[in-house]
Length: 386
Image (cartoon, rainbow, N blue to C red; front, side):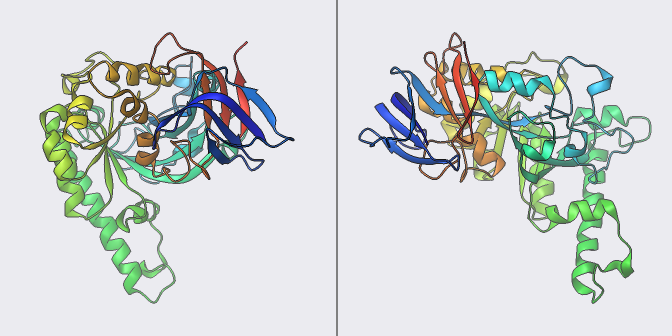
């Protein structure tokens, strides 16, 4: 049993509790929270000294482990750029749990992440979610696998496959439709067949990988920067009646009402990045602010390592300087990120029954001058600042 007392608790879902107590049980879950919580005699007690305590920071879209810290091609395993359609690829197979990034995450209060293939391919493979704890085997970190299927529109696929195609946005869309239609037909044959796996006993590994997308079991997470690419992503997803999210949404500021109307969940960012290519024109915090003011669903991402995830909290701080309420800004890298990953029932807020992923901060969590003093994952202290 672990007890944090004398804390300013940012519950995220409810009010901020001053001089509060947070209890963590031996199963690594939050067992009680409030001002008048009785601390058991056998509990290890941490006095927060009136410091701010929040849920762990969550990076909802990153490439940690598959694009390793401080390495070049040797640690870049996120894009199988030999075919524009590679749904059979699994990010978990390319992820190194000993990537130094995870250590930096813990030091910065980042406790969970969704790891995804890169955006070279139209359909690039499955994603998975992890707790950012120390491990030598990636399965020791995994929460959900798969958590989505990575897809991409816009500049990246047409640049990478310019010589053999597709080489245009039209080609991107057509190739994605073709693959989804083939998968839909494949699934229909399986459902209509008396054969155990349908299709005359023939297994197509690409179609098998896309089956959970067609059945609505996992979302297609579509990399889209430009407003017209976002509209294409929505158009295709609706044609096939599949779950989907928009990743990056750089020009969401142009169509926030449309995104709200379509009930799209966007992972916005990295907003701290410079305009590195044409489709990123308008990059900044305008899109996040527009979605917030419109009431559309979104979280922030730093797209680590494009911008390091240890700076994700700084992005939330800048968002708060643009008129977003402080607790709402903090939610974009905690509870909203958990919702984007489909894990809001486990993490993202300080609530009884949720995983004890908790950070004690040296100051205001939205202040760039603040440090993570103590990081806890699943009730275990994984980092303590000297």
